Amino acid sequence: FLERAPRTFMLRLLIATLLVGLASGSSCVDTCSTPSLCDPITKPLAAKETLVFTTLSSADWKSYDWTKITTLAIFVSGGDDAAVAEVTCLAHAFGVRVVKGEQFPMDDIYDNDAMKAFIDSKVDEAKRLGLDGLNFDNEGLTGTADILAQRIHEVKVAFEAEFEAPQISFDLSIFPKNGQGDGYDFTRMNDDLDFQLPMAYDMCWGAKVATANSPINSNVVGLQQYVDLGVPASNVVLGLPWYGWAYKCTGDSAANSTEPCTVQDYVTDWYGEVAFQWGLDTITAAWNDNGQPPITLDESTQTKFFTYIDSSTSSPMQCWFDDHETLSKKYQIAEEYRGIALWTSDMVRIGGSNYDDMWDALPVRN
Image 1 (tube, rainbow, N blue to C red):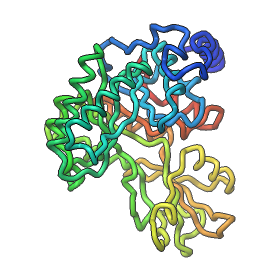
Image 2 (cartoon, helix red, strand yellow):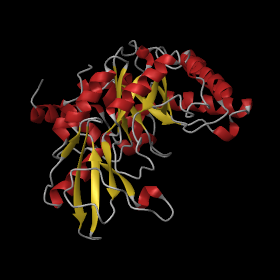
Image 3 (cartoon, rainbow, N blue to C red):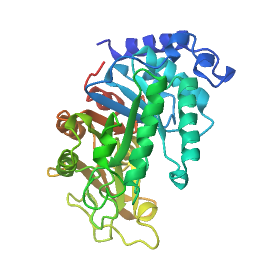
């Protein structure tokens, strides 16, 4: 590999060559100086996947190590077409597919005319922006298994009519059994999805004792449930977090504790009152700003944590997080499946202390 500094210089040179005035239009060909890079990728889908989620909250994508990525999944609100087209131009230069995060409009899911219009609009958008497909994220559905499978089939048929090798995927619960899957027919969906993406994070939701975001043992159980339901391992991509959780602990939780703390009671909402999603860079900053307290590895979940006193509230806080060391072990179990996805690259910023380690820990794909 090139050393990072020369590689960054070469990336900037390539970007300057490929991209023309961003404000000049909202289609790929308006943005990219090499129009052929606006064509969807036609090579076969990757046998081993590393899908990187981004919200384009920064311009760090210009310095990504594209050898580590097979698919970039962009989750942005409307009106960001020019930015999406700009990213697509560069990603295609490295042979990386770009898909856009999407949701089915569930209020119209039974309306054939509305759904045809929705699907047609997504095909048109993909052609205009140079996209390679869609990544759906409709969570917590109930009673929709049949109609959802039908609509996924219609999406796949529509994209295959216009694209040589489109990619359609769906983000799902890590546990398809246990009552979290009654809105989805995983076997039927498998007929039309290129892969299903169980999201192995936020498994701590509502915890009364601080715990892991993505326990490795739970990941193994969830992946096996997909196989048990008839989804081939080769069609399962494991979603993993580049963020962790910070908990407000009860007053009797000692600072610098090496034991999981008891989470404070809340008035209205657990999330936002006593538990918070923090990107890895934010957690690292809290560790540095509070005297670098001892970090404990929870062996059973392969998750790290530390405790400190919040100077603004005098309340004990405990942060649980994954880093390049714990994630490397979780990446390994996913190699028995289709691969990995990470939410999100924006949470580890270029120039920060985590950037090199987190990207270096990813397997080489291209």
